[in-house]
Image (cartoon, rainbow, N blue to C red; front, side, top):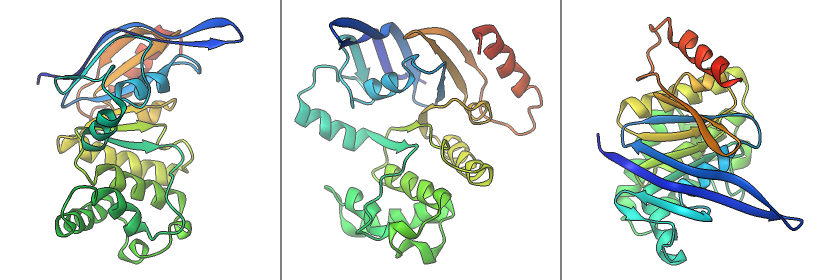
Length: 250
């Protein structure tokens, strides 16, 4: 499949107390439309900064980002906001649902931006079913959800506009093992159905779900391995990933 996102010499620099801090350094990268790309590396390596740059949430200092055939690094802010709305879905470690709205209304508030209500309601119902969020929770206040339920609702909200890429930043970071497994199963199912995913994680168990692992160190890509689509029967998958991470100094 052709590359959906391409970067050329992507760099990000922050000024701190009069000195320059280079968070991303000349990153050349291609992400295919059928990838489940996992970004790993030590704290401060630039993982989240890379995710935010690729999604248009943060501007690079230098370099080029081509997303679905469009250069987005210098796109005007109003057009970039619309581009993110139409092409990107976001799932974060902390799920930011509006407490004043029901779970369903949190989803519809995003989905109805420029779309017919009937179509959005039907898609929301289908997505709620796919993520396994019980009927009783959909009309309830967002504050009543468990951590795992809130994350599933967040994924529905992220997918309601059929994004080209689902960006996930430590999506299981605050979940227990059972809830984490449910979210990871959902992401694997979405990828199997054709969804492109870019996920940042520190967790090896989560990383196993990716088809490709990028390892960042000091703002640069130190390693890249392709694992292929997730298969529970692939007994050597964990060993291959662990060997790669050992080589990276994980």
